Length: 446
Image 1: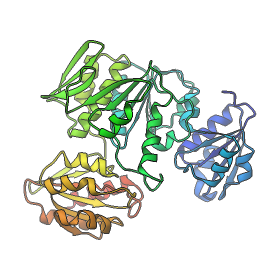
Image 2: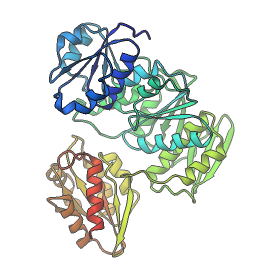
Image 3: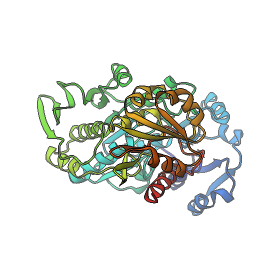
Image 4: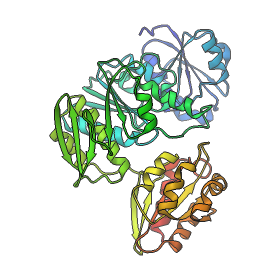
């Protein structure tokens, strides 16, 4: 891709946008960056670009700049229906995402992981497996470093592992992973997409440019995933924790079995530290990607045995008076909370936050069966109460600290207090990490 002297517009100056602007400028492009925030709000970002000849258009998006650019690179946080993008698209401007730009400059095999839940854990496990197998590995994308930083570094990598969000897939044209994994699908980001199908369609684009030489690792147990996987061009490689597969990876009777081209590998699960049914799925997806891309089974299984939970995903905080407290702040949608509830019984569930537009009804069976008390917080509390409040003993709390205090009073010894919100954090906190830290502090103060 020739960038020298091209007029390129970078839309959005978060971490990804800054990295794109830097890369494009280093390739000789004439770069303009645009962001609705002010210069004072972007001090850090602009300082990172100070060494380059880059034009800034702040506190506005100038349509004329969009319409006269040779190439527009869109940051993941920028919605597709931005009027200036719509106008540029209509006039045939080339519009791409950061992962599309990066992929054009990356030669190593790419394993790309998407899904509503489990992306970060699966990506991190897969990166650790590759490294333990001796591969020089880049891990990034939607976590850690943007993919474009790999292209910028000029380093030679053996393997690339990328967590990919639906937002990043919106403007791809040739992005083609050697192995692409779709972990699951449940309602999410309906504050961004017109409907659930539009969100699903964005996710499915991860397979769009694959050929029969590539692999699609898909969740056989997720009806939506399996339905949409039937028409893919790539070789299907399913994973399941419910059924035995002739080709794929599955778990029965405490053993993970990998079968491919008549070859079989078995891994007992008893000594695996990473707990929870959702993590069994994440592990199988990561193992499938690793073995399909040439990793050795022994080193792969060693990595799995040593791997522990990531922060803010079903993380054990402490036990008080016989009650275990778990923090699952990263569970910002219903599908993630379902997996968490499947992992415990006799639960006091702390949920709520900023509503993302999806239905809470899918939680009903598990709440009836496993949740003894429901403590609701945040903007979504009223709607959650209407949809779920009659299913179990339900309380309202003004603050997260208040919710922890109420939970401590009402949960009997042997029970579990689980903070798994099913909502984003932005109504009460800076982000899900601040929400997690506040929960941990409140539990430690009991």
